[in-house]
Length: 523
Image 1 (cartoon, rainbow, N blue to C red):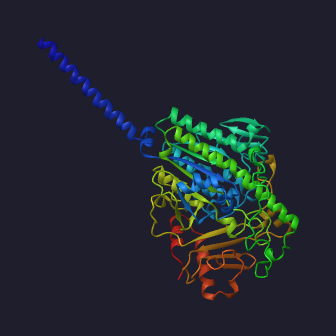
Image 2: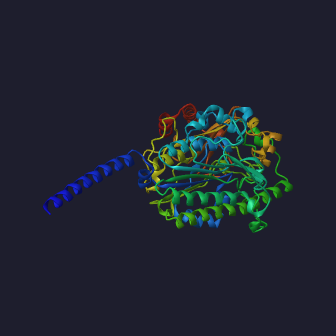
């Protein structure tokens, strides 16, 4: 009996040692960056980027206010630095201003669009590659960059960094019907039935990705970039929402069809007042934009329902914003974007998720270039040094970082860039306002600056624009939020010089130097 007992003790010791060794090896493998370790410490992220959504239309959607604003933090001073789809989306992917990406336009002919991004190799380092490298499953669903996949090696090209890819590559995706999609390397056609409606298809694919990831890869966090084409024109609502806002009219802001534009630059002064027919068209589009957005609300609800059903809602950040704003009738402009006016640059941003204060409001200047570094920090990744933006994570914890930017740069490449290449119908249809600009003179090339109150000796928040024509606009947004009275001619020489000096510094800076310049007004 004693020898057998000793034998058993010896084997027990051997087994114990083996278990300890194997456990140490396993723990070491997990520590080395396996999906299991990433999931244990990092949250999921659902990023929803709408198309041409302005603050007014967002605020009027009761469903989005219930699902997002009341449950998270609203960033009231969220801006894009260039109000045009592809430049803004490129800045969102890379965390860089347009003067550092080199993408100022939507079309390849002027070096912009998807083809410009592809040819420049910008896709080699984006928020997708950073997070995928950190162990995240990454999924893209919807509109990518204008013109995709023109110029790529094939129509089923998938950019680096994406585990799951679902993006239109042909047909008419802006119409929400009759389009083709690159579905993870295979082109799939969607027709004209109710089930083919674009936003709903994206919603189903998103929910499936979340379900599959949490079921089949329970130890991997996920990042999804969800990009419906709504409410971009033609802003087709699904049948279930057609007519629900019948008779809705675009807001008659004080600047709507502005009477006196004598203080404005020539490109505005040259425009006649909008006709009744033009105003009617603005209202028709406004109604459709509100109705079509209801489908995006359904998408957000479905995503939340899926996250809750899979038990991961409490570990998921939901980030909702737009690639640019949208004007409808302000300053005699038809429906469109691509100006320095508030309606085009100030966009919605709401973030809800673990630890995010519900119902809170942030009034600090935040930008689309801040999204990539925010996602990077949430994922435990250090972003590349080329990134111009700054992380919003402190705000998600209820804290205001100090220091923070006091101003930021606006950029615009000029009216010749408004035409879009319609090859394969993949680039966005011409906005009525852009067509008007081409016919009667769009905004010339400009650089501009937004500055917080009590900066540069001015009491109010400033919007400054310097056109390459030698013309200028300057508005005290605290006293004149509708930008009715251009005060540049009455501004002191000192203020003008300091504005120009700040713009000059910002428009050539990048990375940490740019962030430093945002925090330090010229003396």
